[in-house]
Length: 179
Image (cartoon, rainbow, N blue to C red; front, top):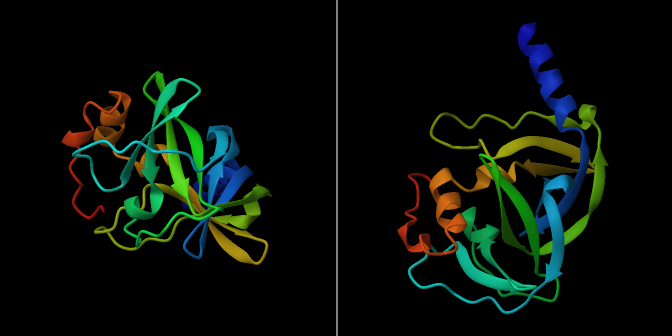
């Protein structure tokens, strides 16, 4: 019984507005409060000796922001950028600091108001698979949206390297089981 109450509290806490986007044919959602802005594709400067999921950095109004290719981070096949490809600039909190990173996605869909009763816990795939970055699964508009905890998509070491302004990007090593 206690587990059911805890799950109900967790899904109630997850209810709210989400920016939805696509990678391949799957739809994902990010808490709208984590999204700073959405920008079209722009010149991305590659940084040598970085993991393949780090596309590089952009200059956004005088601020250098690292850009993560979410397809590659999730182990999906890379694709050619299209007119719909865009960068979602998000705020990631680490301790008392906020870091802005860009995440490259195939296309942005819409902002959805997702109710608690439409959210289920992330399925368990066993102990070998890390799904901590999935907050839940939302049933909306006839399909399932994977709700991401953007602060857990990147490991602590990856975020620390990004926070260092790219200096430590070459030190990032893929984690076991990660792409």
